[in-house]
Image (tube, rainbow, N blue to C red):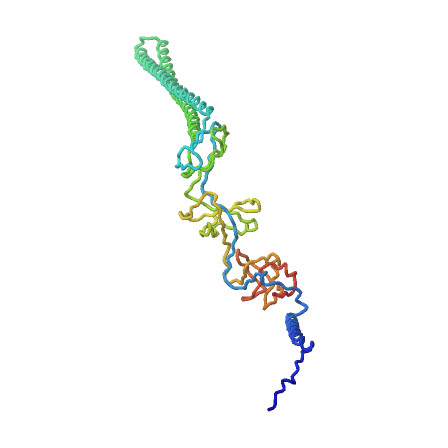
Length: 420
């Protein structure tokens, strides 16, 4: 039997060249593929690369762009009058902050001795003038009676003279009296007529004079009555009442303090009507208008309202506005409660738009990096209207394009950037 050749086999170790052949071949292939990829992305034009996780992307779409203004504010009472001191004096605060009050309820009093004393003096003066007026009326009646008496006596004298004149006519016809006596009787009649006429005129003049004097005195009494009425009103106003129903807000002075005229005392908050007070950046002031819709956010609960007032002045680079909205018991509103809001300026339908991002500021709103595959290309754009969440794309993009909306500062203004 013939044996196998195993006894003749000899183990030969591989050479060094054959051991490194395959790793070198694989490495060369990887380098070749990388070179081809690098060449496919324009080689020398790609000068930067950045990790994808560091970027934010957004896709261009068409829709309705709602131009709005983000703002913050607080809840204020639509009617919260401040009560002022009508006169100087010592104030006594009756209602405490937080107390509920009804309309017309006395909430504070002011003690003014000078005003009270002045009222009493003017009242006494009015009483004296009223007494003088009554006395003048009595004197007028007395003087008028004397004038009537004088007129009546003149009438009697006239009748007597007329009778003597008629008797003289009869006697002169019978030649029983002399011509001198006859003429004397005629003179007496003429004199009596003059006296009667003067007495009538005197009585009428006396009546007009007395009426004029009484009218003047009555006018003086009326003027003094107006002075007293005004002082009575001022004294009554020392009891300060609530102009509306609600609660007492804050004391604006101390208890039993000596205050001056027109100094604020306290506030009354009307809880039946609230408004939102918003602070809007002054750059949007010219775009605001009365009646614009406003979306109010009370801790996640949205309520729609309308602009009711716009302040004509700018404070701290902001314009103060007021928003009226429908009151809802479920809101549980409180004075000075904080809130956020959106002022809705306009709706633009069928607008090409993209989400807002830092690229607007870093690129100046004129350039963006559009993504195609793994390459971001620098693209010039033109942006339009802006809202809180989106911005209008006027030119430089189409529906479905993907943009990098994060800051472009890391791209160093490169034409193309590789996204790893």
